Length: 350
Image (cartoon, rainbow, N blue to C red):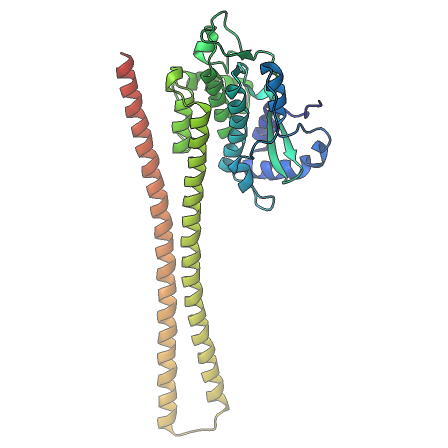
């Protein structure tokens, strides 16, 4: 078996150096796709590796993730969509090996491989390096193992638990969400989150998810099945909000277009009236006065429509500002909620 020659560590470093995440994702899919045709690990390769450890065969016929099904080659990948996709694929791998009674014990970016799926031109993720994987036992203790920066607290104490892999997945999720440009910056940020200090500018849903994955108490962390369900719900909620915003923008655009059409129609009518006046023979003063009055009325109507258009534009800007304000309130509320939960958690531990 030939592994793809790009690890998640290398991929993240390239992305962080690039700057704009969305442009990097699009460029990666376009430029990497031909290079990975011959060297990409099949989508269910983690099944075969883990089955060798567990002694149980794998059919390789697992259903594709819903997140993968939603991806399209024509659209520019959005950051949180890519993060959700990568997380979902990693969860598929962990769910499988955990269902076979195997704990990986060394989930980290350098043990995860990134390629491009030639079929749908999507980013493909595979778990690798099962050197520290072990069968799950009712009790397993010993010397600490794994990579300290990514290992769960109980894992460093030598305890074997599937929830330890979930903790490591949380560290990887952090690196997927934010840009950490240097090894020192990455080590410092991971140290902070391991101590319970999370970045404040994270998406509220992902911030709450991170806090669960990196809970120091394994029993408080979601298992792979519950985590997969949570990630799917997050994606559905995100898609629903985006769909509602798009419908709202479409409706507002249609209203603006209708007003613009009315203004244009009145302008044409005004022009036609002016041309008609120019072509007509001289008429009586009374007729000219009537025509001038009609022209004034039409001009006033046009000005009224233009004023309505300006008011509509102001209303749209106010709505945009209201959306931003509501998002800020939501984030503040989530932060306060998280702080309160943190305090309650601290009180429970005391």
